[in-house]
Image 1 (cartoon, rainbow, N blue to C red):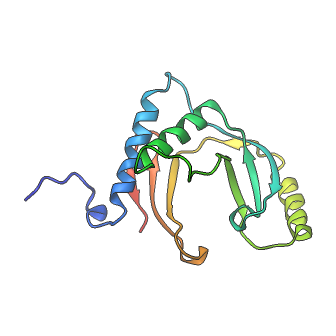
Image 2 (cartoon, one colour):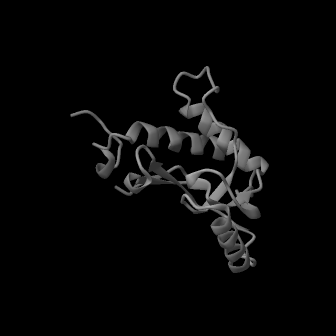
Image 3 (spheres, rainbow, N blue to C red):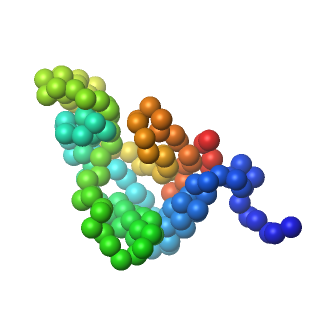
Length: 157
């Protein structure tokens, strides 16, 4: 029997290679941090967007640590390693509302979210959530959480 270090709940998971790549990227990124460095997401403002999945969002400050993590993940997940032409510009944000709303509806939600979240200026994330986003949004599936501390993979499916 082959020696397989994968957790039992991931052994047959079709997304395991991607999860392993993300985990290794987190570990590599973490190894570049100075002692005491910690990723903190700080909100710039709550705003509306043009895309379904960016209907209402909190824009996040692109800190050095966040940009480095993004770069590491993009490099490792770029399957051919040569082209970045298909990658969108990096826009760090947290989606608050997904939807096809008109601008007036979005403005109401932006005002409500801005008021409700006025005391929240950011947070320290503990994990990366890996979601399969192929197909309609009601078919998206949470696959796993990957720890930003040690790259540990926790299956969610």
